[in-house]
Image (cartoon, rainbow, N blue to C red; front, side, top):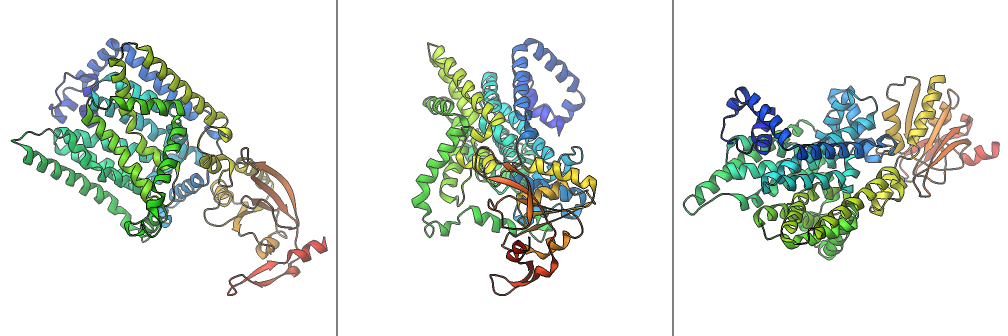
Length: 566
C-alpha cells in the first residue's frame, strides 16, 4: 500500500516527468531509490515549497495540541471513548457502538490508540488529530491532481491548517475528523480512477469508500456523488460508450467491494439499530410533506450557511464567496468540488431532522481547493496584486483570531451559540469532570468509596466515571434518576463506605441529607456540575413506592422524614 501511494500520488508531485505507467513492482524494487534521490534533489531545488510545507505542518500540530488536555470533554466524546475502552478490555464488545446505531471504525481506531495512550479522552482526540493530518495530505494531493499547481496545493493546506472549522473538530474525539478524511481521499481516488480507468484505482477507492461507510452513515455520500466525476472522464466520439462502460464497471467494483467491507457489521445482532438511529436525524422521502420539511428548507439552509460563516470567520467567508467570480476557468474541476459540497448541503437542509454544525465539516473540505484555485486565478488576472495578497493575509489573521479564542477561551469564542452550549457552556459539556475525578481518585486511595452519578445510559458524569474508574477495585459506582426520594441502594451504601453524588443536569439538587464538597461552573453559563457527600440514612425510612407509571415499585427513602430527623 505504501509503495502504491508513492507510485501513484506522491511521485507525480515531486517528479512529474516520471511516467505513471511504470509498473508498481518495477517502481518498488527498481526505482524506489531513484525516487528517493529525485525527491531529495527536488527538495534542494524547491526549498521554498519544502519550508512552507514543514511550517504548515508545524502550525497544524501546534494548534491542535495546545491546551488539548484543558478542553472539557463533550458527552459524545465520553460515550465514544467508553465504547472504545470496552472493546479494548473485551473483544466481544468491539461492535458495541451498533447498540446505539453508530458504525465502529472510529471506535476501533480509538481502541488501538488507547493501547498506547493511558488517558482515554486524549487517546480519542489524538486519533482525530492524526486523521485530520491525513485529511490535509489528501487535500494537498487533491488540489495538485486537479489543478497541477503547487501554489494551489500550498494555499489549500494553509487554509485547512488555519481554518477554525477544522481546528474545532480535529481536537475532539468525534466522528467528523475521520469522516472528513475518508471523504477527501474518496474524492481523490475517484478522480484518479476517472482519469486513468485502471483496476487498482478502483480497489483502492473501495478501501476509502468502505472506511467512510464504516465510520458514519454520511460516508454513503461519497458513493452517491461519484457520478459527478464524469465531468473529468476523457472521452471522444469514437470511444464514448466504451469508456463510459469501463468507468461504470470499475465504479461498480469499487462500490461492491466497499459494501463487502460494510457487511462485517451484520455480524452484530444490533445492526438494525443503524437505520433506527438514522431515522432520528434524517427524514424519509415520504415524511417530507408530513413534517413540513419543504417549509423549513430555506430557513435550514440559512442556518447552515450562518454556521459555516462563523466557523470560517466572516472575512474569510466573504473572500471565498467573492472568489466564485473566477469559477469559469478550469470549470470542470471546480464544478466537481462545488457539487461535492452543494448537493449534500442542500440535502442536509431538506432531509435533516436534527441539524448540527459539525455535520457540515466533512462536506466543506472540497471547497478549500476550489477557493484556492479561484484565488490564484484572481491573482493572475489582477494587475494590482495587492488587491489579492492583502485579503489573503486578512483572512489568515481573522482565522487565527478565531483559532486563538477556540484554544484559549472557547466559552466566549465567535462560533455558533449552539456549539458553545454543547461543548463548553451547557450540561453536555464536561466542566468539572476533571476536577471531580481528581478529588475522587484521591479519596479512593484512602479506602473504598461509592460514586453515584446523575443519569443512566449516555449520562456525562456516569460515562466519565466509568471511563476513569474502570481499574479501581476500591470504587463502586452506579447511575441514578433524580427524584424527591433517595434510592435505597445509596442509603444502604452510606452504612458501608463514603457515598459521593455527582449532579450535572439537575441545577437545583433535591433536599437530601448531604453536604456540598464543590461546584464547578461550565464555561460562562449558569450551569454547574456539583459534587456532594451523602450522610448516613436510617434504613427504617425506606420502603417501596409506586412510580409515576403506576405499574412498578422502587425501594426509596422518603426525604421529608429524613429532613425532619436531622
